[in-house]
Amino acid sequence: MFKKELIQLIIIIFLLTISCTSQSDGKSENIKETAVTSFSADRIHFGSKGNPLNGLIISWRGLNNSQHKIRWGYTDSYEKGIFSVSGKELLIGYAGQEISDGYLFNYTFPDNLKPESILYYSIYDGLNWCENNTFKTSKDPLSKNFTFLVGGDIQHNMDVWNYATNKIVNTYDDIDFILQTGDFVDNPYKIEQWNNIFKKGEVYLKKFLEYKTIGNHDLDGSNIFLEQFTMPENKKWWSFEFGDVLFINLLSNIDFYSSDGSEQSQQYQWLLKQLQNSTKKWKVVLFHRPFFCPDSYGEEMHPYFDTIWKAFDDYGVDVIFNGHMHYYMRTKPINRNISINSPVAKYGSNKDQGRLEIITGNMGSGDYDNKTNLQGFATPIPWYIEKGFMRVHYIKVAVEENKISIYALNRDNILFDEIVLEK
Ligand SMILES: [Fe+2]
Image (cartoon, rainbow, N blue to C red; front, side, top):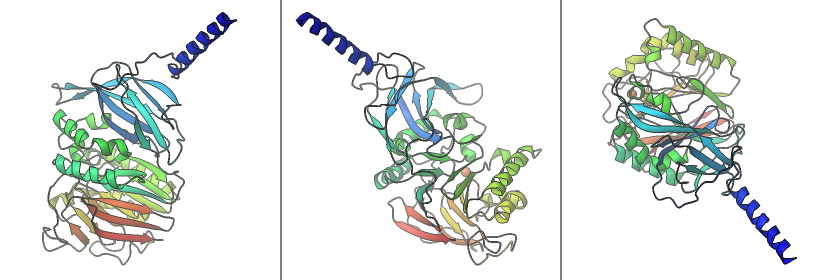
């Protein structure tokens, strides 16, 4: 009798051991549960092919192409299982002089993730599992009340980037996503820059889902930016919906400037279709180069007043977020269908109302601060400027059913401009 019970006990222990190591993508696993001593995966960040709950992707870099894995779940038992992930080599450098920058690993979470939930995950680098990490999912994309941040142009000062992002990390636990206005890096050919920007923004990039637009510095003839980040559709121009808002991103770089116009035409036709087909109450557009800014750069977009900007006026775009200029600037209501040299009375999407353009381009591109309104801007101040501040900053946007509240905050979360749109 005792012998029989002993055999049963041994069988139970064996089965329990198997069940602890085999919750995988169909394969039995035998992975060391060692403490992390020399974990070789870094640059963890999130993107999405769609809205924040459908198409969410986690990406990281490994130093070699060993078999990486991810385990995840809604509890720290990682009940969704263990999944193998293949790496793709990152090559950085000028054509013919590229050197390996390790391997990029992407894992796509299944669609319809639970809203406002903690995802527990851990990454296996071929030798060790990293410590437990968490990521909070967004609200249900059908929710008409949600919050997002906007900011961009990092490029130069990594201490500023580190300070500003840590402040944001410590301030917000309820942000649904972030829009990045471009010029993430200054020179995409330099590994050192990629290392610095990921290292100094490590906690921020691990905490928030960021949708990016592409700045002139990000591409600069290199594909490394497109390879490294996930964005919806073709990455260059994309859209997604959240609540009653249509978000559109454009590429204001090379594809606007193709000599035969074909790329511009392709993007323009796509833009028209997005605006024509949308029944959303609010329309928000993101791209890097602004149409309205008081510097010589401001004329870069003027050839597209009669196509791209006219589409904004014709279809009543509510807000346009840009970067490129290393300051904050907010325009008066602009509707070029009514006037090309004076503002209209109100922001809004009615035929007699105008667009709100906001330039938000300093999360590291400059270390200046505390300038007063329009201090440092060239005079005379153009007719379209309502506010302008040269300072490190970001934007917080709170969307409700009938209003969008926009707050401009400096690196210490001090509010310096505010505007509410209602309809
Ligand atoms: Fe730029």
